[in-house]
Length: 125
Image (tube, rainbow, N blue to C red; front, top):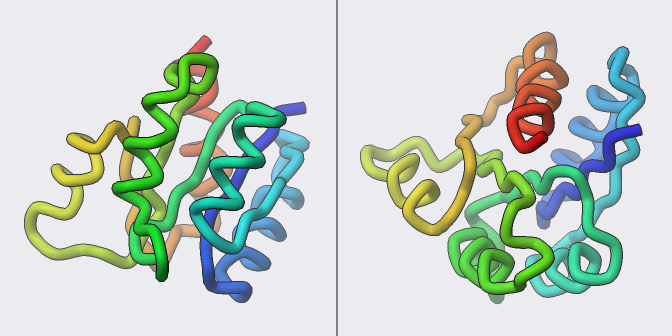
């Protein structure tokens, strides 16, 4: 059962992604963090198979959180995918430079999201 950690400050977004992933054929287990610091702590204590990272959060943004996660030895190889509404020119590149493995724009395609997430998990293996 693949474990997904979704770090997102918006409750509605977390609920939507949870429902989509849990209803998929991949039998995902979804953990949620409502801020970057909590997400980093959760990942450190119980490393997931993949981290979905919102880029625009108060206190600590997703770019900073991604850089911090990449600095933790046992989390270095876990795929981190930016799942974000940031769609300005250069945002994708900034995410990848910070250490994200991939970039998915919101609004998400509910039919494609589970396959995209599973693809990133498989590519790690």
